[in-house]
Amino acid sequence: MIDVQEATKVIRDMLPVMDPEEDYMTIVAAEEKIGASEALRKKELEEAHATLKALSRTLDAARVSSTRPASVPSEGAHTATLNELDGTRLSLAKAISDSEALVASREAELANLKEEARRLELYDPENEHEKQLDGSALRLAIYKGLGFTPVMDKKGNVVKMLVRSQSGDVHTVDLTTGKSDFEYTQQLWKLVSS
Image (tube, rainbow, N blue to C red; front, side, top):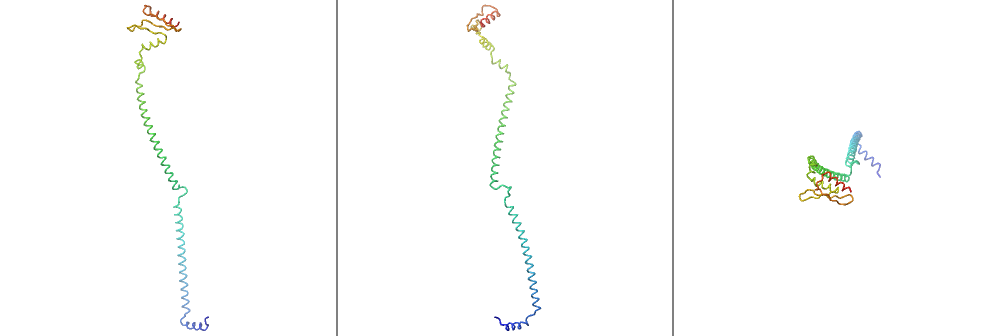
């Protein structure tokens, strides 16, 4: 324990060194310094908090902008969409190519049909038919169909007529007997209808 007398003696020895007014001013100056320092520290702390809040908002904005929005597809979905669109583009290109080939084919066919139409406009079927058919052969076929078969001599003249009747009998008519054409016609029709 400290002796009271000894403490009193130390205080008395220090009295000439102590100046209460000066000590008071030192204390007031120290308190002012501490207050100013505390105000400065408080101001710096508030500025630091404001800077921290601004940086936090910037960080949040950066975080939001760096994340993919819900309306934007994911990287895999985007790749799948691009692949699908490429496939669609290729199929459309093939369809266009096929259509162009078909158009070219149809144009060639149209040109051929126009040429054929022009040829057909110039074509005379009656004249061609006459060239292809021999009138004598046609008449002969008609006569045979009716039941008449002409018999010719070596010079190509009709001398006899074979007549097949409706009953199936075959009759011969000699055309060199000198009768008129009308009489021969009557006789031939009479035999064919018997």
